Amino acid sequence: MNALVITKFAVRTIVGFGASSIVHQVIKNNVQPETAVEATSQVVASIAIGGLVSDACKKYTDAQIDEIADSLKKLFKKSKPEEEVPTADVTV
Image (tube, rainbow, N blue to C red; front, side, top):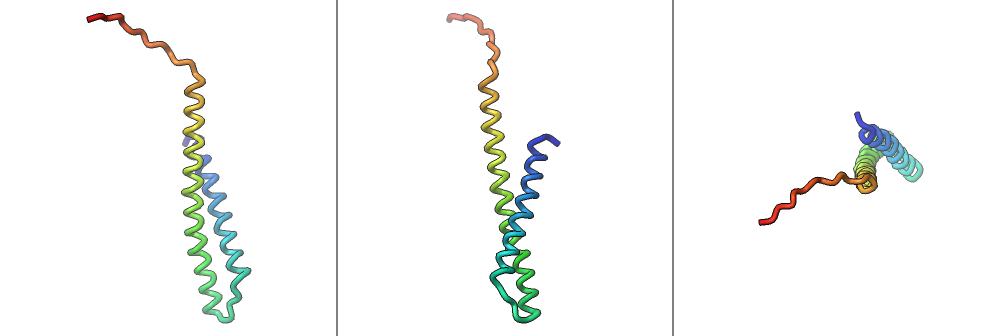
């Protein structure tokens, strides 16, 4: 595994848990179930919505990491002196 794969995995995991937790807390703090069915529905809905938000956040952070990595590759590629390629002086 290279550093980019490990970085993406770590960020994806943290962002996924964070997003799911936030969605769960928002629903828990704003919905007051009155029956067992409503309570169960609230839990299932928070899991489903949390998963959707988590997936969207993961895709976004992956794209941002890829963009940063590409920018760094270009920056370091430009800073390295390029080797001169010998050319033959051919006239036709």
